[in-house]
Image (tube, rainbow, N blue to C red; front, side, top):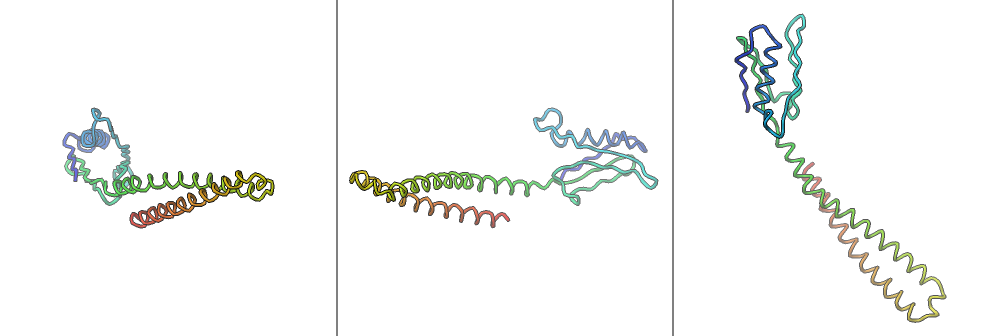
Length: 171
């Protein structure tokens, strides 16, 4: 948990308190020297009942931090939930390559189906059988494409099962 205590904020000066808060948050989360500069948007305003501090804190659940003002100090404490982001990233890393491979398999299957259709059309033409060697060659290619398609369908099913399993695992 990161705790930031703002000691330089002037009592009853919400703007100074917010400036100090931004300065401390910048230091706590990378600061200007970091490649990942993070400056949360903070807005302070006064209502009839209280001062209101609104902070844009991405990655924080609403109940994952607290803010307190006491004795001229503003305290903002919280913990960023990185586990969910890491789980999403892990899911992406494991599933994306499988989906890419599945897409390639689907394109390959479509190409093989188109070739098979062309050969079927040629084999349906009785002129093909006038050239015995051509008919044998087409028949052999038709069988070869059929075998390749069977393997491709089997691999596609295996990939789809793996993706479904991972998606159930990661929810």
